Each structure stands twice: as C-alpha cells, then as structure tokens.
Length: 109
Image (cartoon, rainbow, N blue to C red; front, side, top):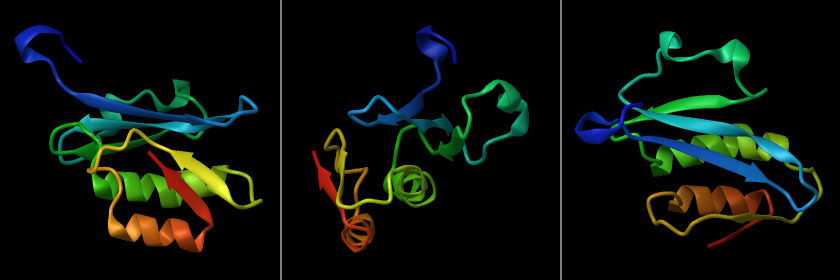
C-alpha cells in the first residue's frame, strides 16, 4: 500500500458482536489473485482470510464467499443472527439474501 498518486486500494472487513467477540477479518487486495508473497500469514490474526478484486474493493461475490465460509462458521449456532452492514449495494446480492434467509440471518443496513 502506498500513498499519493501511486496508491493501491485495499478493503478490510471487520466483524464482532455485542459481547466483544471478534470475527476473523477479511482483507481484499486489488488484483486477480492473492499471492502468498504478499502475506505474512503466520503473523496475521487467527482465521484471517484474503481475497482479490479488480479494484481492491468489496464486491458481491467476495462478500458472499466471506458470508458463507467465514461469517456463518464463526457466529453462534443460535438463531436468528443479525448482520449489520454499510448498505452499499455492491455487497449484498439476491443469492446472499436467499442464503441468509435459509440460515436465519437477518440483514440490516
């Protein structure tokens, strides 16, 4: 990550609950792939995941993957669960809403 005109975009998604428990974060890099050489996985937060997108921002597919592979696996099994997000329409698609309904996750923006 650099500053000035040559800067690169990355997105970091954090999650937690009212009890203060934290979900493993997701870091989205700009690019087509995530390369191991970019990461210091051994030093990262336990369970932290990485993704790549065209511009380094969150997109629908990346958010759906995070929801299915990280969020659902790390929240309590008792339902319903509430997921509050920033409301940007690039994050939540129809398939995510359907998946959330099946899993008894209420999505609020």
